[in-house]
Each structure stands twice: as structure tokens, then as C-alpha cells.
Image 1 (cartoon, rainbow, N blue to C red):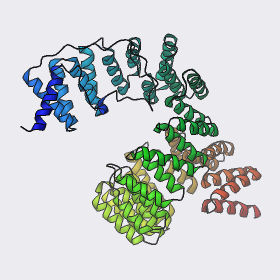
Image 2 (cartoon, rainbow, N blue to C red):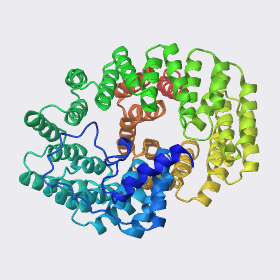
Image 3 (cartoon, rainbow, N blue to C red):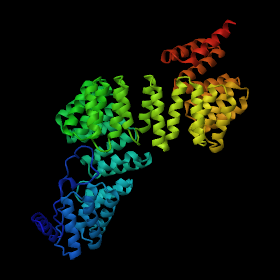
Length: 586
């Protein structure tokens, strides 16, 4: 047996014979995984000393498993460490082992194991406030916020710091009803513990989540006056000022805060983001660079500084950071996607193509190919784009329908309608029931003035999915706009409106159907709402037309002029204006 192994066994044996009560663990394993943003406020002094556990006597098999666990931890095999500690904690019901298992589980972010260990720990040692706190943290992770708050109150009463801020942060995913209930409980607890800073910040967070921004700001200002400036309170204040459209105040406050707390990354990140909003990209980039210097392997920071450099017209610096990001496991896709975008900005389609083709399955996969196809099309490399799409369909057959749609969409934009029809027909031979392909083929049929084909394709969709609002709307609008089957159109569009009453395209169709029926007042009601939600040229064309025929030509011209300024190349808008003005002259 090697000298190193004997030394390890000797150290581990010394620890284990003490019953695990005083085990030293790596700093990275200590503390709760449910940390608050930045450092939490100064911990209250523990009024209850942790009870010393008596020496434990372990069976040889247990001792051996724990020895292996400690050696595994030394070798950073924490999965083996966790498995052995959790197994032996259940077997021996030793509180020290349960605590150790919980610490390792939280370090690994193994939530199921942490939940198991915390429940065992609190069952073995039900009066231990640290065990109760561990159980409460796991309840918070599970979303059992009200239940966890009752446990945290016990922890606070025992004199141990309770993570009230962490609970409030997690309430961001709860309902307003739960948040209201929590807010009432925080108010009650603040009467018992009126100077508890974590409760005050947690209360401000809940108010923020409930949209009560001024009340939240008043609370956090009070906390700062009474307890002084600390990163969590300054962080929340900065967010609140920004959301209240007091951006200059937020930036001024944060500029001072990052000098006072130079090692508080979230504060500096918020400061950098507010500088971006303010338009100070150079200042923002400097803040992100400081963050990257402090945390050179932080992928979010590398991405932020790279994006700001890219926006700031500094492609060399942006490329450097994107390349660094690409070396971090799991970040290659996002890095290569933006490297492609960067090359595209530099009019270097060859480098852009290389980067886009490196993006594999994931969030950036389809956007990368969509950008690739458009870039190659813009640089007269359409044959290469089609070649890349064909290869992609063969290499990634699950995404083949989307690749066919990309090809068809670009052909539509190029007005290659016959070529697009061939692409969609081939795609539908392979995927005859694909709803997106059927819909795209139907929209192409409308451009080819083949209304019979359009109706067939959309009815195929509706046969499979009678509540497909997009298909209902498209068919209804086309019937209203291109045929005299207005009542049929009204039924279809009304059903789409029932399904998606806030969709501006459907609201626009409702207005157009009413116009075709001669109900101008009702038509204007829908079209005005659609235009408020989506000031698109086609909606403007419809609204202007109804205003024009209703006699309000001045307002119609205002709507059209504004739309032409935004979308000067809109054919729908131009043809509508020309048609109505020509009719007036006749």
C-alpha cells in the first residue's frame, strides 16, 4: 500500500472515529446551495451553540464505506462520496453522517439527494436548527414556500440565520395569491423581529414581484437607512429605479455601489446592463471586462461582454470573447452562432458559414441554419445554401420539415413561387401530415392565386386540429378578402378570435370581415385595436381603407403616411392607396 494511501487512511480514520461530528470538508462543500444574491446581510450571532455529538462507533463495513467516501472526495469523485454517505446515514442514523450527506448533495446540486438527506437529518435530530433550516431550503426548492416559511420561523427563533431572502427570490415563480400570503407573513414576522435585515429585503422583493414598485423602493430605502448599504439591498434598489424609469438615478447609484463593493459581481453586472440601456456601450463594456477579469470562466459574463463589444463596433474584441466562450463545455453552440453573426456583419460569408455549420442540436441550431441560408442567399450563393440544407436534412432527419420550410421561405421572398411549390410538394411527400408545411403550402397557393389548393391544405389542417387558430384565421380571411363567402368567413374568423382574442392578426381579420359585411363602425373598433397592438403595413392599409370609405380621409392619410414612413416598400399599402385614390378620381 502506498505511503499516500496510508496517510489518507490515517487522516480519514481520525475523522471517522470522532463520529463525523467535526468533519472538515472543502470550503466549496460548505453552506447551503440556496444562496442569496451577493453576500447575505451580516449573520446574526448564534445564540445557540451547536451541540457536540458524542463519539460514534461504526461497524467495519460502515467505516470502510466512509473511508472510501473521504478518499473519493480527495480525488473529487463526489458522486461516490455522496452515495456512500447517504447510504450509511440511512443505515446508521448518525446525525453527523446525515449532515455530511446533505452538504455534499448541495455542493453537487443533487436536489433529490439533498431532500432525502435533509429529511433524514431532521428526523434523527428534530431540534437541531441547522437540520430544520436544511429541510426548509429543500422545501423552498420544491416550491412549498408557505410550509418552508413556518420552518424558517423556527430557525430564526433558535438564533440561526434563516434564508428569508432566498425564499422571497423563489417566490418569483409563485402565483400572486401565494406572494400576497407570504407578504402578510413577512409583515407579521417583522413585528417580532423588527430589525431583521433579511426579512426586510425579502419583503421588498415580494412587493417588487407583485408590481408594487414604489412600496418596494420605500422598503429598501428604509432598510438601507437603518442597516447601511450592502450588495443585496443596493441590487434591488438599482432594479427598482430602472423599472420605475429612473434610469439616470439607477446608473448614478450603481456607479458608486460598484466602487464600494468591487467584488460584488451582480451589482456590476446590473450596472453594466443599465449603461447599455443608457446608450453608454463603452462604459458598459468596461464593466463587463472587469467582471470577466474577476470571473474568467463565467460564460454569462463572456457572452455579455462579447455582445456589447459586437454592438459597440469592436469585432476583434467581440471575436476574442466569443472564442473564449467556445472553449467552455456546453457553450460552443451559442459562441459559434454569434461568431457566425459577427462574420456576417463583416461581410465575410465564408467565415460565417463555417461558424454556423459548427452549431449542433440545441437552442441555437435552427436560428443558425436560418441565418446561414439567408446570408448565403444575400451573397448570391443560393446553390450552396440548398446544398447545405440538403446535407442538414440527411444529417438531422428530425429537423427536415424545418429545413424544407427555410428553403421555401427564401424562395418566396425571391418570388420564386414555382420553385417554392416544388420544395413544399417534395416536403409533403415525405411529411404529409406536417401542419407547418401544410400551412406554408397553403400560403403559397394564395400567392399563386390557387384558392382551391389553399382551401384544401387549410382544411387538411383543420381536420387534424379543428382548433388551429392560424388555419381558421387564414381560411376565413382569404374567403372574406377574395370571395363572396363572407358569412362562412365570419364563422371561421370568429372561432379563431374565440381561441386567441389578443392576436392582432386575428383581430385585423375580424375587422376586415366586418368591413366586407358593411359594418364600418364595428370594423373600425377591431382594426383600431389591431393597429394599436401591431402597427404593421397591412393592418394600416385595412384601417386606412375603412376610414377612407367611411369619410374620414384625413385620418386615413395620417395612418397611411405613418405606415409608409415605417415600411416604405410595402406593396399592400401602396396598392391600397393607389386603388382608393384612383377610384375617387373616377
